[in-house]
Length: 443
Image (cartoon, rainbow, N blue to C red; front, side, top):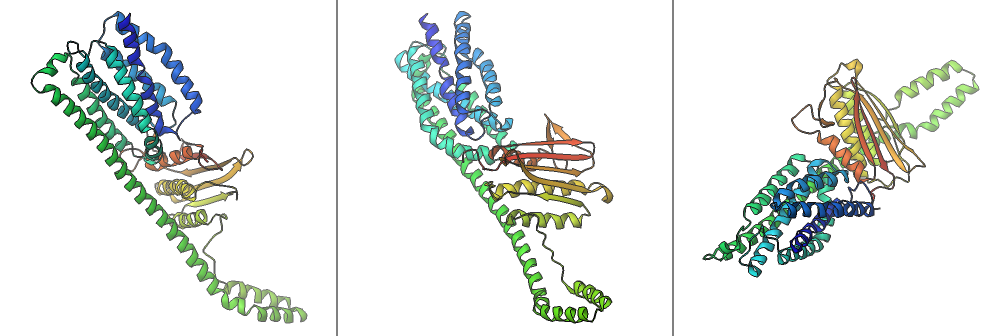
């Protein structure tokens, strides 16, 4: 019976491991934190004793039960999040690698206490050490992982990068499983014990260094992407400003001579020469310069963006229809808003270029509903009808891999407390996006 309770104590490692998995997902929770904690405990308390009893009753190797349990817990973990599988699996695999390291440190401590035992022999010392260290690690990692890890989860939309980290975590996990000392007596041969602790320390330092290096590299890439996006917005705004200035300069003379124009019209009106008035007005209108800047909305950044893509669409002979109503109370970051609109229009214009000119169209609507709590963006555009999909996700038809633009839109929508849905009907592609006007869920 003592062995059974020792095995059961081992299962408690699931709780700090679960906490580590959820820390970087603070903005990606499908349910409230309280509800998720409740679900974790409801899952843990029936499953842990059952798995402990199976391991004890059938004298199984702990790893035999561990792997199926990990699969079940990952499915439950992913279903509680709004992120794509690449990110949830990357975090889950990393935590598994970290816990495997802690498990081997616990084996080393157990070898000091019970030198005649082995890793497959359940001992109270091993279980208490592993649970204590894993809990301390969870507490130590709480702030940095929650603050900095969530940034990567929220913003890094490159599945192949996340899956690369899974391979590294899997390598660490497998090495630790193979490195478990089945018989502690072997550690007391020559300097094997010293090598064992040295190897574990080296692996721990390496894993943490790789984590820090990964964070700084990705942070640099994200900063560069932000700079590029902001520069593009500034260029669009500058272009709009220059066009507006040119229009004002071109109309300066007309405005200066407007008094004379009024006097001329007044004289013609007194003479009741209506034909001359009509002819004069036609000539006057024709001399006025055309304003190339259209006022789609009051938001200057979005307006500049829409003007930019309107010109691009015009060059591609695409028929445009914009209805833009962004409320003054909208607190969604301009960069997020422009990223969503820019990705939508850039994809749409590229898609329209593959169909005959007479069938090219883009309809974009932005409006509020439900007591102005959400900003809804809906867009439809023509395309050639050819799609690539995997697991209900659209893949790029212009290069291998995922459509990063759509993934970015979905991530921004989630970040702002909303959602994004993409679908096609025949040769029409549709996008429905909703974002909370108050902005990020944490606001």
